Image 1 (cartoon, helix red, strand yellow):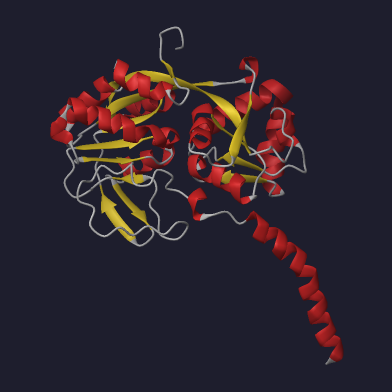
Image 2: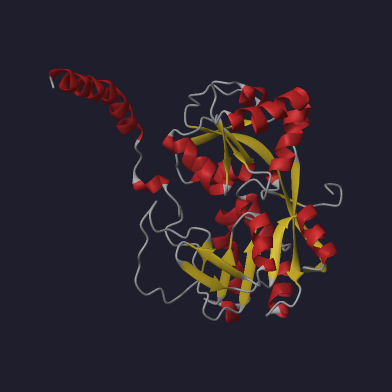
Length: 324
């Protein structure tokens, strides 16, 4: 009995320092999405307000799904720009006030939802929101036009570049992309299966360290769990950094800019232009869209000076033919 008690006491003593360290890393609820305090919700009648961070939270579904006049499927990496974009659009077209529903999931998941007729299940809830317009990277949009899921032409509007997102004060001492291959560094990386950014990241890794670096980050470290593949990188990467699960993650520059603007303990490390990659964002009308005229209004608006000025707040650049 004494030996068992001693073993138990020793085990507790060994765990105490780890528990204390874990407690020091616990962050307030403010680090958990949604990060915009209801601004990314177009519904005017919201009824009971019930959001429990980290427990009951549908951060990438916005608005009232019961009777929308415009449904947008938007690649998630500019979710933070949608509230001001929607507000500006509704000032120009007040008939849409409170009647726009949008989702900001990764493009590959939105593609699967289109194929499922607009139906999605999250937790214990299933609903259907057939899209009018789909917005993602130009290559993805064009591929869905070619497949007949979207009606062309693809409409490009802004560009973006990559950065390395790190926790405040950069505890992993990350200086460049080469550091992501370090065995001691835990990183969060977008999943190539459904996040188009992963292709650009792999290309940048190869520019810096050849196939060896790309393999280290996306295969070797995935196998030993020092690379975490995200399901929804625009939410998980900053959250994993703030919770101490990772020390770095490659995201779009705009995502790091947003996190810094709202005061979350996140910063970034620049990637030189020669090693970087550029994304071109585009959109197109969805075939058999329930509201085709509304889709065309949005695709026209998204290229307007008003919309471009909103994008520029987060570091996006207007698309030009030279960029293409």
